[in-house]
Length: 96
Image (cartoon, rainbow, N blue to C red; front, side, top):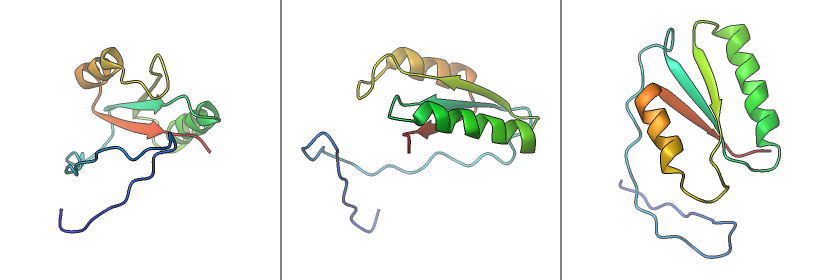
């Protein structure tokens, strides 16, 4: 990455951050499994439900599943394993 970025962490201390490339873009979502990850922030469940409804109305051939980690701010390897094993894409929702 050629430019610097600044990351603000609401926990009050700056984390060590290393840049990574984005995952390759899928050519199409039809027939693919998309995980909506509710990250347990305030109102994130409301947002994930609205996003799921949008997909159902506008892209009905996308298989949308909602998933939540066991705790907020804590890595959930079991959840990540499910997404990697079964999913084609994921959207992380952090609330409003």
